[in-house]
Length: 189
View (cartoon, rainbow, N blue to C red):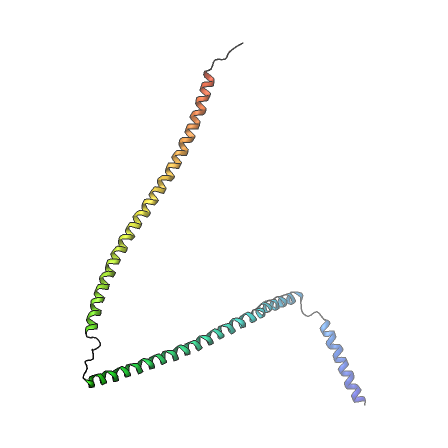
């Protein structure tokens, strides 16, 4: 029994020693303030984690939808190419049947190719003509812009000159009024 009480007493004395050790101010106030500043910095960093996680989740969902739409477009393109291939095969079979029946089948690219080249030439001529017209209108626009700027500058200069002439006119009126008042003789009663 005394061994048990010795263990309990040892534990209690160790606890009292630990409490007294913690009561000693071994952490200076400067260190404590620096440590609290570091904790505040980490607090701000930790507060940004939900924003980052939300952004990451939104980007992942956008990427998933883009991948799904990409797969859908790819399947649609494959379906369209399969349908085009099927129609081309059917067209070839029909052309063979027409040839077997003795009917003429027009070649793809014969007359149509020549007419396409002619159309291409006419379109190139129209494009050239439109480019020339565009250049002419650009030059006319630049000329009209420069004319407008010149007129604005001339109008500004005219207003400045008009203001100067008004001031000069006012000064001349004041001086003539003073001269007429000085020229009147004084009447003595």
